[in-house]
Image (cartoon, rainbow, N blue to C red; front, side, top):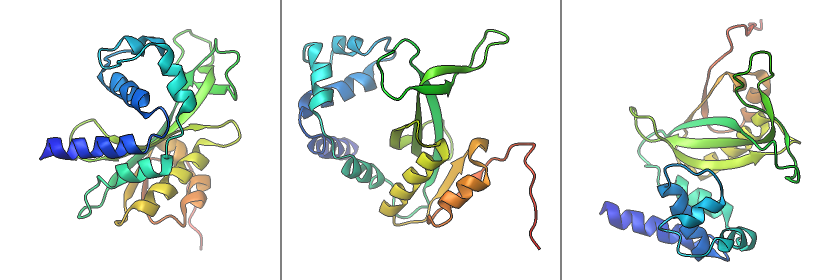
Length: 210
């Protein structure tokens, strides 16, 4: 029964991938089954990628996936009889040598050299996932999007939470780290039907209104 459910999910995901879906689906399997990838072109060497390396780029150029429907497909896998636990965060992906890559900005990246700032040129990405088990260390991504240089991590996180909550029938609990423990993020999410669990910075000052 689990295999049938997985096959049904894969078939529905395939239907929403748009043009070049065969190559895109092979690319997805290559990413999922490769223990480590040093370059994008290396994915064409995967045993499950049944095309030439040039199809990697052509499929991404031609594909117009139905992103909203794919997101709803993932949300539909969440059981209806529990309160889902969501976890959001963002991470930087350094691209210091990609000089022609559009919209690069300074993103956080740990630096082992003493005195150097922990930043690099690249892109930031925001992820919102569903944590299906009380124990364990894995989660199922529901949204994974780039944060443009014209928005903040909090703005993109609030947008993702709003989109996911529209498709949920049960009010979720959404957790975020201290970067989101601010009045700005609270204002952005105040009308979203979700309960937030936020970590606060140790130097955060809280005031009680009278």
